[in-house]
Length: 243
Image (cartoon, rainbow, N blue to C red):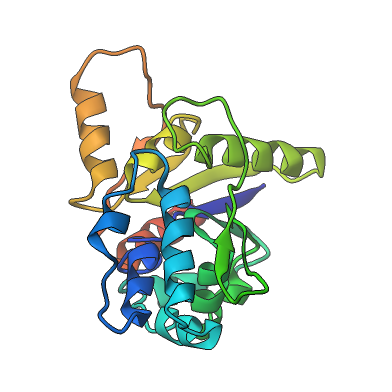
């Protein structure tokens, strides 16, 4: 029986939004107003596809994009937390489920020396095309009306747990660490012994407070433990493993 650590990426592992950080590679560090206004709620990945096409059209090289992405700050305490996970790989599995994209996450994790700590990354596939523009695809299709059209984190988590179980791996406890509105859906599939860890002051924490304060058909079974830094998460994981 192992422990599973599940991490969101933006404003969780990194202390900013990787999709907006990339705009720093542009000479003026901003997108045209018409492009910024083209975003539709729930269709962020489509918007980022247009943004990355514009960046390519400005003749920003893939190497420049990578160098800029590697400067995004890691959230305080996360490096120590991931090092602890790596040192305890015999008892802890670690995955990332993110609405960013595969190239951004791989670049950032490798630059921070954290890639070997993560067993799997579930995110939107990305690649550079023959024109040198980054193309971002949907991670999957799904029927959840609460999540962005390209990614339901609950579907990803439930499928991962099912596949692990079929391989003989069971988890005595799951820690879900996130910050955003799209982290609520996967939190609702957690069990009573699991822990959802929202970042203090961010959307997920506010949604969980609202959920607890109102009678609703939506039921959260997992315990809620808020965090401000990776050190808070590390303390809770250590405490749990010692029980």
